[in-house]
Length: 233
Image (cartoon, rainbow, N blue to C red; front, side, top):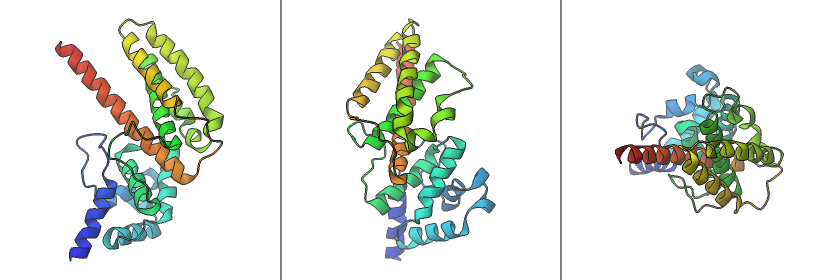
């Protein structure tokens, strides 16, 4: 019994990542995780081999099936959405199968290029969202599949567009300070990126998605805290 409980505990420790919403379960059940790998999120579309491999990994401490990484990245590319459950699955896979060390929250000291690129994408997306609220043609819709796969082909354009969005924010007196903060964050991230890789492996793409998810969560949490403090003052 002790071995079984230790395996289950290890599984949840590896999954542990900051939740996108407080209503999401701290210890997500396996069926909800598996639904995030399936077309339309339907349980009947879960691959039986993947379900069996995940159950074995949960109960015995074995490696997660390689198909887990493929399935999660495939759903992210298709739906342009990472979310809590998928970020948790990617984190658990990279920790257990690739012996990576990944924190629960956004790590500003981490220098892996894929992680930095994911965070950079989040910053540029936030700049667009704040400069052009309600836009129907978002950079996430257009580039979320290609940016982690072939960064060298995408990021120069994203940075150019980001500069335009920040310039627009600077013209709004209520957003000037925020524009400066975003611009500094982008510059700080770029200082640690020597060049954009022509391509990234699935494991690197998984780390990109974690960097994106954690940075985006950090951005919205920081902005909400700043807004609340301003209103109170």
